[in-house]
Image (cartoon, rainbow, N blue to C red; front, top):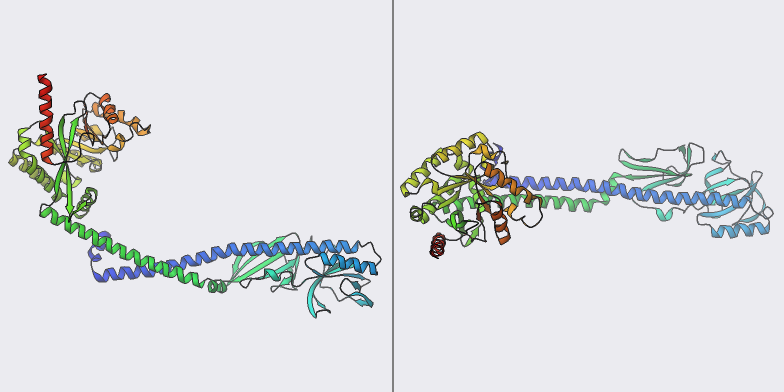
Length: 530
């Protein structure tokens, strides 16, 4: 019902315009939706990589802090001596993420690699956090030398000033981050770097990513370092706006193109239907005949009538126009047109050669149409052609509704026609089903013939098909024989089998078929005279 409704309105201009507009809008929406999926998917991967980069840097920074604190506390030189200050300066020169190395005692700063030794010890500021292993954390200590702040970590008689620019090279305008120190054995973290949570003390966040409001976040920890990275969805969408526009326009263009293609296909189908209808009415279709021969003797015993159509000089494939005829309800008219051509071409010849027959393909609609059956009987009677000289080929698909098909086949056989299943092996019929159909023969599909000599599994099925056909006393025609090897294979299998294919002759005119039979008889007579 829906298909009929579509066909009813498809040819109206307003419907076609509405369809194209709907597909353009739908394509644009799909493009925008896909762009968001791409943005989210791409950003998750980018965010994961970025977070890992920041975390790796944080691990390196805190590892260097631990190493330098151990080295300073293990100094081999007297406390804050000239030798020790030189020692500290040499060590500082080799560090990557530290700004100064200092010595402390009794709650006071005494000397460092940068300042040297002061005139008198300077009292230390109050620390922000103390770890279980005795580390003192200063999250934002003011530096006298630069009037800026930096994190300081100390333990024992040593402390180190961390470079506040340690993560500067990793800054990304799309992301904000926080680098936190996570002391061993403690659930707290201390924010030391980044714009998020700097100086804040909080609980360790669960690792993983998520979304909170308009913010997408990712938390990761490794050793004594934890990192949080945030990104605003609005910032992502703004940065990806060019891609969103491109994909939206592409989706809209694709939707519009699909609409145009559907319209053109519909127009082509309608045009094909109209042209075919006109060709049938004006008898512009022609028929070619392909010989069917006794494989052993090579003698022509029949010919298959094949519909041909040239429209304005263009050869239209039978697969195309027969499909159009079936879908548009023209198949019965097409079949009767072909039968009329066959009788015009071959009626006199068939009357003179009662042992020769013509194979004609009919559709499922023809098979079940009682009026077609009556018309065919009347037409053959008027032409004085025997019913058994018009062999009717049906497809396996025509027999899908078994009970109706069996009844229809029996009606045609009662009128004297022989019924063959065409292209056997490609459709619905099974070997066991052959006996129920009450047909007279089968035509083995060319797909089986092609496998001969190839080692294909399909070759092993051929003897089973032939054996079952003989059990049910069915005649056999093998399609698609193109080589001597294929002919010899089938000739050796059974004493009587007919063949059809380019080896015996391509589709040709009715005159050529008549000449072929005449030449075969003359050759047979000449052989018998010898």
